[in-house]
Image (cartoon, rainbow, N blue to C red; front, side, top):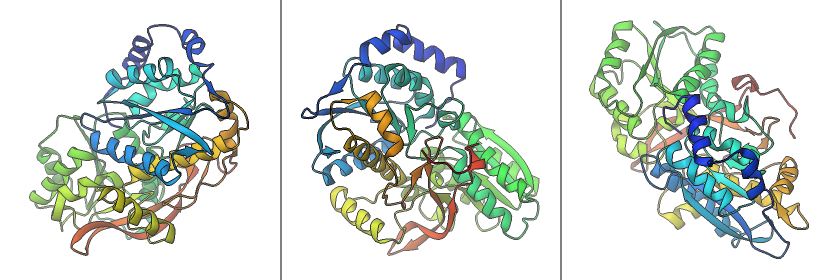
Length: 410
């Protein structure tokens, strides 16, 4: 999800990890298939070690939770899941994908947190004719400029939730001094803030300033918070996640800005264990995301109860995205009568229709992204713990957020 890599570096790593041409990869893995009575081999890719291991474990739980609720079957077929560790970035993730495709010869794969891993590996899936269901990685290009019928996504494009927040905030009373933008210096940081800016400025909002902190090494956010205060901005919009989000939110409070300059951001600013670690510093923060464990619907209440019983922890957006990847594969495999192959799954995927999800029912758009609702959330203390309470359903994401054509689902 978060790593600094130039496009040149990503391509170089992808080619080095391959060790041969795309044509060779196609020869090695395109023939992988499973007969009607045999076990279907599915790959699962997640960071099971390194800085993103918490998100990876939530994804792993979500995917296996779907399987557990369906007796270990997808589309009525027995399934073997081959897990590989994505690690911290392309230097570990791309070779892991290569092994999954050539050694393990899976017919489909799901997962990936880091956008740089997904960008570095996506051509390998296309060459191998093996569909990938991305369960987190949000780089816009994955379902945009680099889109393919072999690349689908059950999570989001980076601009989505930020666009929804920009549109909502622009409808509120004008913010004196405008909004100051902060994010890590890497591709996703820019994509997140660009999504917000596009909607906020279109609605008449003013940007007071914009700064990017070095990714992965910034521990002291005081210089950036000092710039916010000096700018006269009336609000902050920040994209940080994981350890970065914990440090940033705590320092925002310690620097005396909490209660004076409101802080907004995409939902991963306060998601899952991050919120628990932030504690009272996060109280009152407003974010947007496509899911909250506090979503008050019958389907989500049942899901949360069962998930918490299984794992002694509430589900996160990472859990739901991987859970839904299982649902997508379940529906696609159910449409195949004979042997299962990657090409057969790609033919079935456009026909999966509506996915019943804890986040709310959704379908794929023409660009193979979820056509899903975004929710306005506020951190509140309920039942003795901090939660991301759902304040408002903001409706589906505007296709303009990621350049997706309006309407027309496959």
